[in-house]
Image (cartoon, rainbow, N blue to C red; front, side):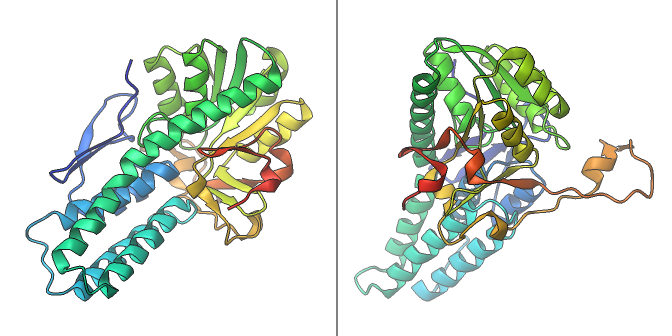
Length: 352
């Protein structure tokens, strides 16, 4: 069975995304016509997951560059347009580094093309558009590599035919261009017949686990069980979890990792239960310019995500709230390693 497709794009410049706010009730695709549409979709979490954020951001600019109505008088004007659009996209959600790195790469290419006398305006426009479009195919290939590397490593270290895996938030096709990072490892294990059961947390307060990960697991008929976030320790003890596998929105140079809030406590619990703890992420999620996790910016989400279920208030009116979207897991708790498309690295031994 084909995995869910969260991002649809064709070379005519048509971009659609699966509106994840509508899941699991309906699979509704919405059109992204420009960068501002993408910014709003990312900010409102209609699309989420660090890789997917960068891909949708890049493709939204490709859509604009393919519009006949978007005209430039010079390469300098094109460069200014590209840089302004990319800088705007970076502000949509600050914790995930993938969008920032994608913006830097695109701006660097635009700067080089602007300086090249041998490249005319239309050639520069085509080259930038092609660069932006490549993010989609590249991410799928990277995810498959992450899945295979992680599956082999867990099987080797656990030396068991059937594994019980716990995961947090959503790191599958809905968070990437396809296949997934942490859930990509689960998919690779399932494909080889090595999954006994997957335990996914609900991932409060936005419920990406119960709404999205559970949806993907059921869709692909992977044996799975949903647990509340506060059941993790009991589930580890009761069911004999072999490994916890999570994603990452940003990894610092020392291996400290920012991921969805609740990840840190799973790492602490995994260490207490002597369970392997893995982080799965493309190499682009590693920010070598940040020394450690203390320097990673942590986004604070609207308090209504905690106080309301839909439009219904479920918390006492007037209560103050703290709603960080992410927390930081220290490198020493990532006992399995950091799984990238280049292989599995000990968390404290990352190399550019």
